[in-house]
Length: 342
Image (cartoon, rainbow, N blue to C red; front, side, top):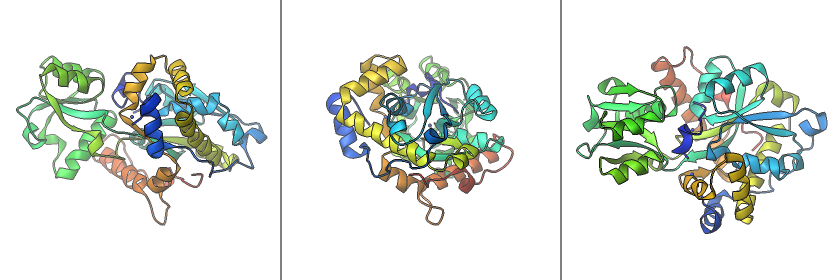
């Protein structure tokens, strides 16, 4: 979607809005479903609480609706959402057992797995749908034009992965560029200050740069659907102890998406309360995210026999991170994915 802080994910900050926009979006493919049913053997029955960590990124926000409206309990799981903004804090919380699950981008799940954390992706939450982009000075028309030029980005997370992904599609290597590593929120600012030729950044920087007439968005994440993706991973031992937990969590997510369609005003009130933002800001952020409903989850996960795109993306992340020294050992996509609860 690194574990995204509020500032980081403002850009990924995606295909929804309140009122007419929100209703139209969910009706177009993000509605919930009762198909998953109610978990019969549950963590609620066993008395074990499952704590899920997440930052204030809009893509995770429907989980707050699932918690507040009681959808988790309706599907037999006792779930608590724990806000955690720092990637390092979320990693240590998962390692120590203070949380049992984590919502973040696939690239972070791969880094965590390579570090020895045994959590399994069980649900796709959202994908960036135009909220991330590469901005450049107007004289540069293609990625090839940026060879040898200064390109700013955070080389510790999803911006770097997305850049490497695009280079891979074109048969190019990152060594051909003068990559400037800087904190995630600084890349767009560096471009506006004229310190770099291009930047991998997100909203609101894409809009700010477009309005400034200093540059333009060369490519955005709408052109790479399903690549910048947030998923929910849960500790394997927790899932083994609660065989129906994944199914219950997924069903609650689908119900939350349906609630956003059926009760848009109340849904916006809940999101505003938990995110600490104005409704109009949330509406803007929602335009650049696409939430995964049940049918899309099943297609994205596929099966081990007929794997979906998530397997390809997870393997690609592992290969790229290994090639560039972000991780020291490869991660097996099959060991990091379990769509049996979808």
